[in-house]
Image 1: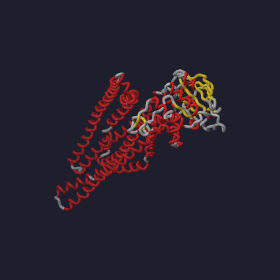
Image 2: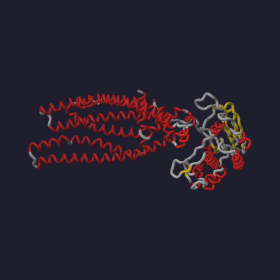
Image 3: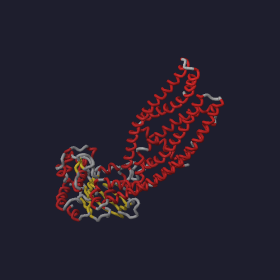
Image 4: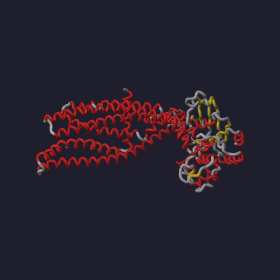
Amino acid sequence: MQRATALVGNLPRALRLVWSAAPGWTSAWAGLLLLQGLLPVLGVSLTRPLINALATVVTQGSDWASVRSALLPLILVAGVMLLSSVLQSMVGWVSSVQADLVTNRISGLVHAKSVEVDLAFYDSSDYYDQMHRARDEAASKPLSLLENLGGLTQNGITLAGMALILLPYGLWVPLALLLSTLPAFAVVYRYNQRYHQWWVRKTPDRRRAAYYDWLLTSGINMAELRLFGLGRYFQQAFQNIRSQLVDERHRMLRDQMLAQVFSNLVGLLVGGASLGWMVWQAALGTVTLGDLALFYQAFDRGQGLMRSLLANAGQIYASSLFLSNLFAFLDLRPGVLDPATPQALPMVHQHYVRFRDVTFRYPGSERATLRDFNLELPAGKLVAIVGTNGAGKSTLVKLLCRFYDPQAGVIELDGVDIRQLAQADLRRMVTVLFQTPNNYHATAAENIAFSNLAAAPGAEAIEAAARGAGAHEVIARLPQGYATHLGRWFAEGSELSGGEWQRVALARAFLRRSPIVVLDEPTSFMDVWAEAEWLDRFRNLVEGRTALIITHRFTTAMRA
């Protein structure tokens, strides 16, 4: 019961989301649905006068008075059919525009949340499962919910009208209509619940299949796949998972089909019995031919509407199940938060950094990456840290940028605990070359400018940063220089080597004139001679700034 209440609670939230994305189009959509719901009732109600008038023409002759009595309902029926067709086209247009706006809105929310949550979330496979489920349904389920809610409303209005039409023939008629569709409702409810449970349970398998698909279709993986002959192995691994998923889904669809056959048979028997009773009444002369046509059309349409209504309700239930995944993702809250009243840095900035008795372990890990760690980076000095892989060197960068908070100890900037600073203010003070920097498939100039878009750096500043990083010579050789697109994802792109990409990333870090500079393995792609020349240039570039080089090479540390 609590779960059902929670699922129903998704409905108003989903509607608010749709309304916020397209208020005007949603209003138009609701108005059109109301009209679409009323028109079938009007059309069916015109059946009796039309049939009776036509029967009069047949029995009494085609004099003008008889023809005229049939002409008006005939024109009205034709008008209803024409208006229904126009409304259907208008609803299709409005729904398409509404769908695009809602999809854009939801994609924006998912993207905003993915860059808001802590980096700790990305250390958990549960997070990736949750994000995968949210992204799978982000574009379709809110719109499916809206579409089926609209169908429920429209069919409900029409069904209420049909029930009123049938009510004069006996209270039992609308009740029979309702009872004939209860088995179908049970089938829809059970299948949707079963399918959602299966879908959630199989999220890791679907993610693994998506990973194999990426391995087999991404150019970055092709060299090793060919060299080691891994293509067939990963193809088979992908097909094994997909075959299992498809087989399980097909078994559920088969079970649903068999249950639907039974429920349809029940509805057919009830409908046949009701129509047989009406034919008997016509034989007794208690109802007219128009009554018989009206009853048949209203009852048959009513059964169809009940099936549609229950299908809409089932889809709303299913959409609510899936939307719980989307909303659970959107409800994630970061643990690394700004203080209620951020503290300002001292008026006179020295820009020294101190780690005091810092202990840190990554979420889900029992091993401490740092334990009682102490380090001071003097203001305006260049410091190099050397250590083996896995010693926690790169963790220092993440803690300094406050992507994580330590479990114990304090990290200070000019004597102020960085947890007392606004995160945006802290991160403006630091520029970083990460150990695995991003390779942006954009122009060379954009790749460098991304570190400081707010400042709108000009061509001179971008080139100066590139020269400082040793990237200018690389970029100058490209077909369109700084306007050349890097990477092969888009047309006319130029691919760079690993070392060239790293130089571009260095330029990106240098463009941001932050007082604290941290470089994580900046020379890993350089040979000894290039490293010596670059370090000399780097010392001049960061003179007067607090700088930290993290490396596993003793030669790099000694030259720094």
